[in-house]
Image (cartoon, rainbow, N blue to C red):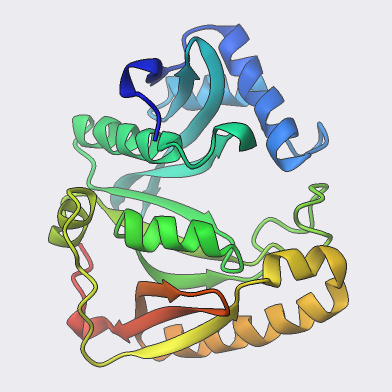
Length: 251
């Protein structure tokens, strides 16, 4: 963890800072210009109820978060489209600081929900979102963004889980304050190999077969009324933990 006085998370205030967010997308994901969210889209997000937050470490812009104002089924919320930190600045609490600042902005707007998607094959992201932030998951989105130019996606379908971060729920408030909420009653598990994100770079055909099988299991369980509420992993495997919706605080 870094010294907190060296890290500043705040809204991006100039066109130059927004353009730096575009550069970060290309550095972090390897996007082409076609797939990167351009500066003018970030301007619109910031001026229409969303936000673009920059993470500045010792004066250098090392990460950002982009969120859009959203509305679904009569509920206003924020949709967090991107959160990114340069590789050399990861594991220092910057991603968490960006998410907590997003929560602060949402609550100041009277909102109690932020949603975003993440790759179910990315173990570290799953642990951060579920164990570190307290999200729940009720939807699996096959090939949500289509196939992209990012080499990290290796041409595979961009399957995603939809994270629901209920900002005022007892689950979230306990999680972000450091309390353990990993007690599970009735539950089922979906296992994901820990090396799958690397396998798609070295053996994409095999990785896609595994992705398809994992997709099928998620879709079956979620349609049956289960909700992802936990995540566990060791050096050999990772498990998503799902509970019946009737036993889960959803809002």
